[in-house]
Length: 430
Ligand SMILES: [Zn+2]
Image (tube, rainbow, N blue to C red; front, side, top):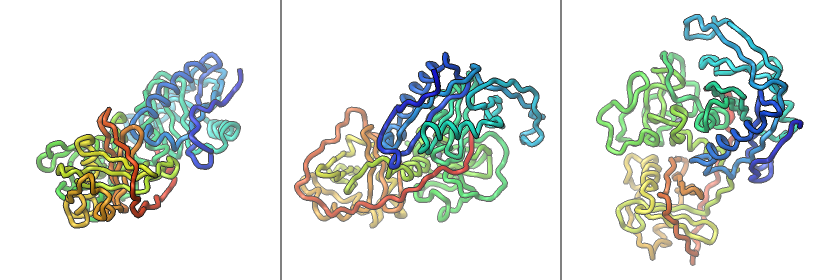
């Protein structure tokens, strides 16, 4: 056998899709089945079978590069941490070198990002990409190593066989999303705000980075103290640790002095979905590549139930989701609405309270609300955005079909152009 490349998912031409490459290190010819099985289970089914990545799978081409290593398993390094939190005084205790395709070294230390490149790693990774997928945008590297480890940033993510899909999804948050960690591992952040997407030192309601997601009634900061959850006043009933946004102290691996958007985002606990701030950033950056297009999206109390419904005009069809079918759609829309005004039912969001019957849903009153935009995916997930404000995801209950009918009249299209930006930054985390 020899090195080879397999297309696992082809969503479209390389030039218009995100090209994700997965390759392994420390896998011999005999180990390739192990590598392939891990990629299938953890990446294709685990990551791309869930929430955001399932929803935006149409943005991603996925290529598997099989690289054969001489030795099985990767090189090992053990550090003497000197009992100090910093790494500057650390010294190498032992090195065990193995002859592998990429020469990556597993070190088993969180403070050393679990793994590090050997002297030839960068050149070998670049060579593999140039040989097999020169249009690669993002790279996932899997180490043949049973210990726990994940490290991501700068468009790349690295994991061991010892971790499951959720760590890959977290590392993609670094490698693809450019997000900082939202977890706390100790210490106090003393520096300036460096403009991260999903952590901040700014606690002023008018200027904090994700202010458009914060309900005016939510106290700021919302959680105070080391790795705090909601502790400034009574936690509102139904408050979601994953989706409801405020300012919670602890993040960027520090306990205090810096704030994260929600109690528990994927950038904190791996398994939860991306929080509204991370989700929206990823969604916005990838929107053009998904090729999801809606001519118009309306939200309002269209059936008069007192709760928000969602109506989508997509090509010649109308999709209509009632609040009773999609209770979480209501919260997504409500939050998008609140993001634009001082309260949920401001004049700018008056459409939320207007009652329009099903038979009059194409009336002028509904067309007037066309500045809002809703993303809906085949995985029953919706995201709402109003104007420049963006909001979070909502999932329709399983089995709740969205009825599609043919539009007899077409409203004035107010589809807004999405800004697209590549979000591979230098943010590194583990
Ligand atoms: Zn987040």
